[in-house]
Length: 323
Image 1 (cartoon, rainbow, N blue to C red):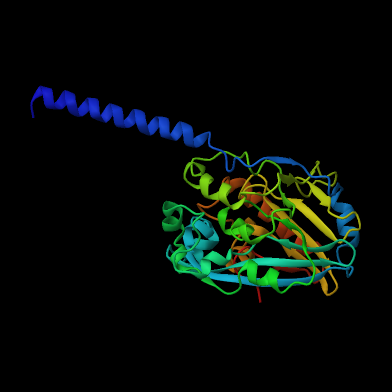
Image 2 (image 1 turned 120 degrees about the vertical axis):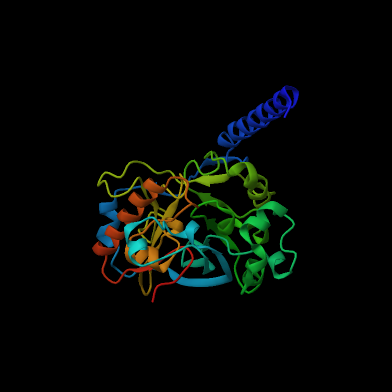
C-alpha cells in the first residue's frame, strides 16, 4: 500500500473515531425523555416504619393483575448471567419468554388507578405502533409480541374513568400503553426518570416521547430520605396507608415499587428491580437492561428484606409471575 493510501486510510479512520466520539458524547448526555415533569402534589413522604406498622393488615384496595401481552426477549438483559447463582444454575443467554402486565388498583374513595400501562391497541396489528421507530422495534423484537388485552380494550370495559397511572419506570415496555390512556389522566413517575442520561437514550428517546405525546407534565413522587433507612424514599400515596410508593433506583434512577394493601392481603409490585421468577427467588438483579446494575442489586436486596418482614406478602416481578 502506498504512503498516500496509508495517509488517506488514517485520515478516514480519524474521522470515524471523531464521529463515534461525538455520537457517544451526545448519547451520554441524552435524556430518557424531553417530556416535562413536575413535583407531584399527591403523596406524603413517610418512614418505612410507618408502612410496616400497617403493611400486613388487610386494606381497602381491590387488586387485579392483567396480562397485557406475551413476549420473548434475550435472557442476558433480564438476568445478570455473571452472578454466581446464575452460573451455578447453568443459565446461558438465549430467548426468555416473558409477559407484560399492568395492575388495577381500585380505591373506594379515590377511584381506579393502574400501575404501568399495558400495551397500545396498535400492537394488535402486525405493523405495531407507528409511534415506535423501526430501529427500536427491531431491537425490541416487537414482532414477537402477542397481545392478550390492550389497554384500550380494558378501558372500554370500565364503568368509571381512570384516575391515574403509576409508572414503575419509563422503559418502553412499561409506557407503551399510554397512547390508549385519555390525555387528561395524570401520570406519576419516580424522581429524575425523564432526565436520566444514558447512551441508549439516543435511540429510544423519540419513541418514549411519542408515548407521552399530548399528555400533561409527568408528576414525580415527592420522595424524601427514609428515616428508617430501608429505602431511598417512601411515600404514602393517599395518606391512608393503602398504597405506598418505594424509591428503588438502579434499573433506572427513578425506579419505583409499590406496596398495596388489598382486601385480600399485601401485594408488592417491584417493577423491573428484577424481571423474572429466577431473579426474585435467587436474588439476582437484571443484566444489561439496567442503568446501574450494582445499585439495582442493592435495591433488589432491600425488597427481598421487605418480603421477610411482611407475612403473606405476594410479590410481582416485572415480567414473570411467581407461583
